[in-house]
Length: 134
Image (tube, rainbow, N blue to C red; front, top):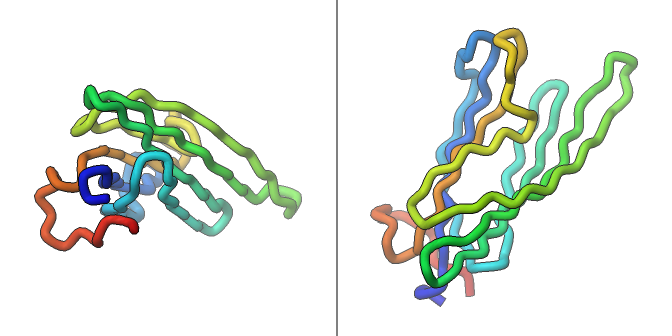
């Protein structure tokens, strides 16, 4: 499995008003093609659950499928749920940004950004990666 294993390096940041960083996480997740890895972010009035599924090709190109659910609290005390499905073209070693709440066009609203990089397991220079999935 080691020759098929893929590492998704995900740097997640929650940016408050005026792009002040409120929280960040730097995570490496090991998977194989077609098997999703999950990421959850929970705040005071929002919860985001995203699964990323890599589908690389032999030529180094491929796609990353992002599936997610976003739960937000409404002003009347209810909860709103949105789902998303995006396919992002991606090459090994390329970094892409994913914005589950949208790009945050206004400086007055918080937003979440996830920077993702897909690499082969054997090419990642990190000594403490978990073993590839069985």
